[in-house]
Length: 197
Image 1 (cartoon, rainbow, N blue to C red):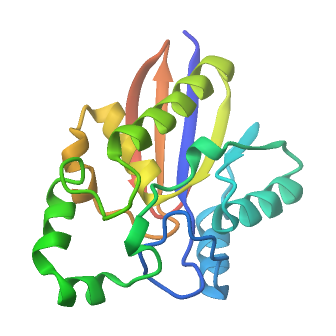
Image 2: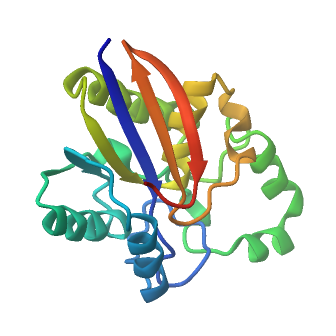
């Protein structure tokens, strides 16, 4: 039986702390770099790293690729969902301004997207396209995907059959890692934790 193992990690804390940061391209903070290095300290035998092109993912992925001597690819389909008018704002500020709007998004982002934001159907389409291509083109390998909270929620949601409308009910801390194992294409979530090894 051919097994594909895919570890997915969320970027560490970016400069500016916790904000709605979809397409906004903030780099990792010093704390974010430490979180990522700690989470990947016991490195599995990855054969390829695939990263979002946004700097909070791509810069660490490049460092890790060079340190381990393994290839790196970037895929713009793994960018975070665009938060439109909410980009760069804190959840606290938005809650103060409009608690009902923010709560509606958390409970069902499909029907309550951020104003001017990327519709969930488009976000889902591009991430699922990337996920499908990764499975097709890298069968039997052990990969690492460096991406975002929304992207990783969508992938794990796909594996577990979770409705899109419930995706943002999952917590996804900075530098959190999940492992997905596909045995002949059948996906299973193996663990969800703060580091790989």
